[in-house]
Image 1: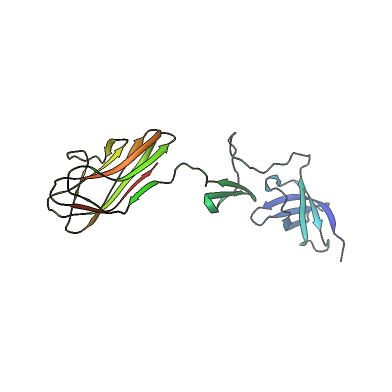
Image 2: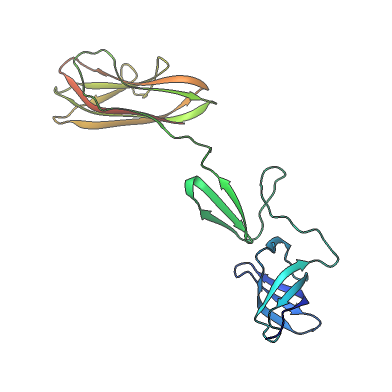
Amino acid sequence: MAAPTIRRGIIQAFDPAGWTATVQALPSQGNYLANVQVAKHVLAAGIAPGDACALLFFDELNPADAVVIAVYSVPPAAPVPPLTSLAGGGAALTGDVQLVAGPSGSVSISESGQQIIIDASGSGSGSPPVVDTNAATVTMSDPSLHVLNTLTFTLAAKATALVLGTIHFRYGAANAGLHLSFWLDGAQIGPQAPISGNDMLVKQTSEAEQFTCAFYQTITAGAHTLELKVSEALTASTATIYWSQLAMQS
C-alpha cells in the first residue's frame, strides 16, 4: 500500500449539502477530482472557487480516497469566522438557511454547515396566560354582584390584553337571566353591550349551559386586579354557577 501524500490543489466548486468539493489537483492542468470529501473543521464560509487547498491522498493510486484538509487564499487572506450573533451591526446570513426544530422553544439556524442556536424559551414577545378557575358551586338569588374569579398580575409595560371569561350555569325562571361583567381595579371594563349596567345578559334554558365572553382591553403598566362578576337580571329564581374561569393573555 502506498504511503499517504499531500498535494496542492485548487477548489473549483463546493457542495455544502454533501460537504464535498471539486478540486484541480496540481500540477495537472486538466485533472479534476469530483466529490472529494472536505474535512469537517474547514469552515464553509472560507471555501470559494479559486482558493488553494491541501489534498491528502491516503493512496495516490486511488483518487477517490482523498480529503481536503486545508483551504487557503493566494494571496493570503484572513479566514471568515463563523457567525455567532445577529445582534448589532445588522449581521445577515447568506446562502441556504434552514430552521431546525429544537427542544424547549429553541430554534437552530444552520448556514453552510455552521449552526447558531437561538434560545427562545426564556423570553419572547408574549407571555403565558394568567388563569383563575373556580370549580366550587355558587348559588345566588339576589341582584347583587357576586365575584366568581379574581386575577392579580403585573405588567412591565402598557399592553393590549385578551380577557376571557366562562361560566357554566343554570337558572330556573323564564324571561330572566344573569348579568356577566368584568372589573379591572374596581372599575367595570366590559363587555360592552347596549343594556342597562353596560354588561351582558345571559339567557337561561331549561338545562345548564355554558357561556363565554372574550374581548381585548388596553391595560397600563403596573399591578392590577381583574375580576369576573355575575348578578341576577331579575330576582326571579335561584341561579347556580357550577364552574367559572377567568383568563388574561397580554
